[in-house]
Length: 487
Image (cartoon, helix red, strand yellow):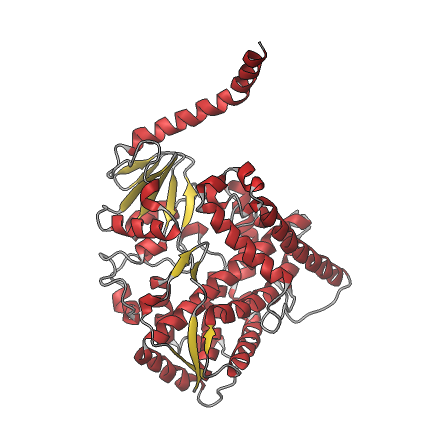
């Protein structure tokens, strides 16, 4: 009798949820069968073909050449579609309705909350509308002094390491952290001089664990994460990150209440001044600041390091960059890089873009469809996931012949004109593109101009020898060792 009662309770509690789940699977399966591509194995789908994150990318690229603009995969009960060109991609990135991020953001939400990166619907629209003026070109110009100062510190510290192999990924990451911390929080973290800080190590661990969980299916189950101590480790590091931001929030709030004047406003200052008008709580402010700390240093670190790697592997191309930079800064090699200088650094710009094509800073992001969606000739089912994957599109041979070759001339104006606007999307595209992409572009050119003014970057290893891991950003495995030579 007791067993019967317990079974009845379970059925009543979970029965409706199970029915909804089965209906959703049936709907996805029925529409999926009409879309070109195999269905994989029963239950498992394509799980055995994918493996870890790197194998997942390899499988997508393998299928890209055989697809008609759209790749279909089943990962257990998850139905995933990946557009392979800009023409197909436009249906999802241009949508003002299908803006809900995929379920894989669930773990990192503990750190970022419902900031602009993760929120959806009317909440996201309101946040985006509020934040957009903070990235107006006038505000961006106010950050240029900070970017120059921190880039100069990076160059000065590298002087001491000339003639040696240096982990340039770690070097530029600390520079990016100092820039984003000062511009987002108004606080000089001094990460470049003091890299072993609790906050820095907490952020590194959060992102490492987030990716580990995302690509380890048994860790998707909450009680298993708890059992193995993964949940506790993740939460402990999130607490460290939150406490740091909350401390800065209290300090900046007190300074603003006292009427302390400053020549430049940090992102947190602007949020605090909007707090009453936009009905923001302290948690709302913290979520947005944490979001920009996350998005604002790891992406640029990736671009810095991969661009340097590409140039180190191609000394003749690097020499052309040096000639262009010398032409701009010859009269005063230690002056700040200005916004006006950007227009004279066209070849450097092409080199950066080609590095972003080969090694996109954000390899893929996902959207969860809330409704059935027409994509070309295909009707994608609600509940399915759509992958916006630069790491696939940027390596599509039909768009970029010899895609593994580093060739900055792909971004000459006449070559760009032959491609779809969304065939190159290092910062995504459409209404939900990266709100901070102009900030990132300023920072990348300023830091690169400082480093390339002072140094040559040298390696005797081929481009493809540097392996990467596919995480929230594209990271070099075990750092990126490059010899730094004083010019």
